Length: 450
Image (tube, rainbow, N blue to C red; front, side):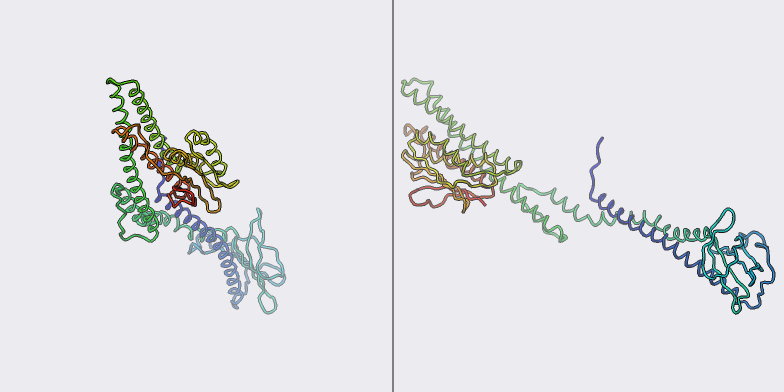
């Protein structure tokens, strides 16, 4: 089953209609409650008014007790939807009913006045009543009554009249609201079309145009991303060009020496050619390893989270691993580091960067060179310094193959390897650079952490 993708218009419309329905429901509830309350007040006022009107009629002596609705069915007497069926009972001072109008059962006689809710008849039904004595002398007592059911019917009718417009207004509001939201999101659709039409190859930023203030940060972020992507693409293209150049040299040397093996040569020359083939193959392999390291650094930057790393302990382990290689090459290898230095980083990449710096220092300095790894936890940097003159790899003779070897070794040692270190530094929010060496050293490369 294919799930339909959610849209911003749909979400906004749904939330807006949901909020509108809640508000509308609140108004309906308030309307019903208000209808009930106002119906109570209206009926009570009506009962009191009728009672006062009857008592103020001086010509009415209530001499005859009449039957209920002598004119016929009370429904035929209604002239308006909101006309109530009032019942009136009149007693004399002795409690004898002298007049009765309406369908309400006769309530028990009492001396009290005012409003009351009574349960009358069989089966019992609730009635709202208002009683009052005729002044002066309490000669007549008048009670006006209305059925509670009729009163509630009036209240529900009022509440329904309040809520009913919302039943047909709500769809109209939903349609208008949907059109308004769609029109309001038009600038966002225009911005989406402009982003889709971007040509990152040319690093063309989004046109300024007349945009809403809320889109300013988004447009700025997109333009920054485009520029960064274009810069990264340029670096990748440059790196590809350099890679083609770097690989061409050892591969050309491999082809030249392999071809020379087909001709006649002495044992010594053959051994030299085989040695050069082995060296060129190793250099090509090192170049590919550096490229893989660059790819890994880029992937780590995107996919892996930083973890706590004891950089001092890592440096001690790497220096210990290179101790024998330095001894075999006639170098002096030392470490100057605090007992502990914890940072958040990627231990594999940090070790890779340090190994690249040590490889360059040991491979491209003469025998007897002192190489030292230095760490400063307070200033947050790691550097590798040496006191030897950096040199190209020396060939066995001065021919073209030897020159190719020297160029390849120099570029491999000081070019791509340092790109790896620079990438690792960038992954950790720092920077990599060559700086003026401290006293006693001739070359120094430092990774500064943020």
